[in-house]
Image (cartoon, rainbow, N blue to C red; front, side):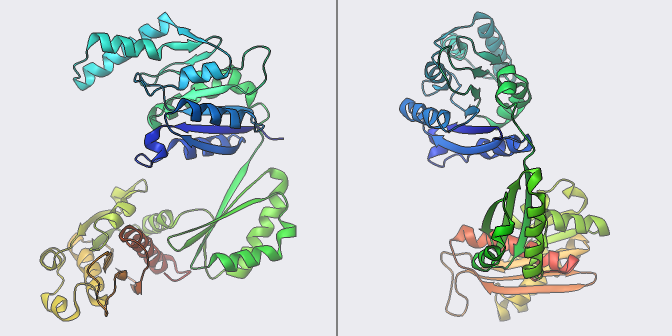
Length: 427
């Protein structure tokens, strides 16, 4: 059996969605890259009984290591370290040397940020963070909170618990030290290679893919296959050990045979494909967008090296802005309306010309919830891309919330440009 881990993400702010969980997915992938299978990621609020229940569930689920994130700060709702110690049968006590190191870290941080700290409150918080369960391994703070590796008490059974801070930068900074800690190394000694592969289709329904996979399911033994439909893209993610490589190749053959006209990637995202295609040609891009309000420019600038290919973007909502900043003719706006194929094409050409770019992309639409008409309902979007070798355009009506329309439109625009640059499945 491969090594297995379970993850507990703590924090009512994460549980209620005010803060997105960045730690669970990051840890799951970091562990997978080391050949460790993650069976569960459990999110709990700042309630002792819920954290205790999550620890009990994961410890009894055949895991070799349990990891917690968050709840290591100086405030009353930071309960993880003491509770994990109690769960493992190891009472906590103050570590004076650690207390001194944390105090020094807090002093440096407060000086750098110009904080005015109450000495008594600060000392109480530092002392709280310096409580260490008996027999635990201390991981030095990256911020102000130390991490811990807490083994189960003598005479009891169960996996060790790795306690990590909640801020992603601190957790990721502490990760190498956590992996090097002897209790963690022993717990993950059974790790084996765990591969992961992704195929990406554009415009294929999940039901069609499901039917195709059923025809070859007896040849896919050893593959864990997951499908995800997102913004029109259908991802097929497989996880498998080295022995299942022939099954993986059979899956690729089957998908290519049935969906070769919609298969656009065997790994890279559309964002990465477009960036690579622009770089290969040495081309630059300018963006003119209306209903997406800067989201498309943000997508273009997310991949590394974007400064060499993205010259700029304009979020032009008002008609005057379209005319003055991107040269959309006022007569066109009056005749066709701001949401029209003609204006999308003019936005693309205007962005290309104004920025001096090789390629221009333009989008306009009605994201809602208001503003629609019988002729142009909410969700109507028009997209255009123009380059040295030609142009491409797409018009359609999207369903969903305002945010869904805006996000889907950005993905459509990237696929339209992919089609213009690389060919393949139409946007």
